[in-house]
Image (cartoon, rainbow, N blue to C red; front, side, top):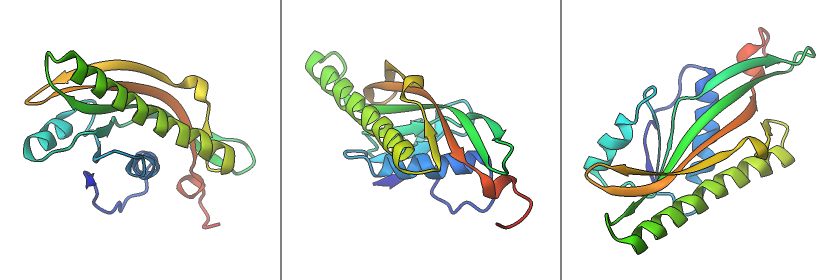
Length: 168
């Protein structure tokens, strides 16, 4: 498994809470070779990594938009509008190869969403409504030909330690 952005996180931020959770789920998803996060609204980190080493199947998260939430009972969450991509390598112009890459990327995308759903059902720290997910097939041409899925969703994560002034 190749891990990008794997430096220990020293600053507690909402984005870091999302990234720690998302990276853990993605790294533990079958057939994923690399997991990385954007440096803003662009995909340069993914493109740079693909030049140096094999990274596919790759999961790539954009830095999420979010909204803090206080339920009034001293319980804090962050609701994220997240976008991530799953790319698998294919041979350009080879229909069978492209279809296989789309199928593998879709299966990985759905496995990640299923884990979010399971975590929502079995833990108190994840609030995920499966109905917010939207999957769209995409292709990316760089030095590699890839096919995959863009996944958009809304997910809430508990963030008490980020917003409470005490150390409960």
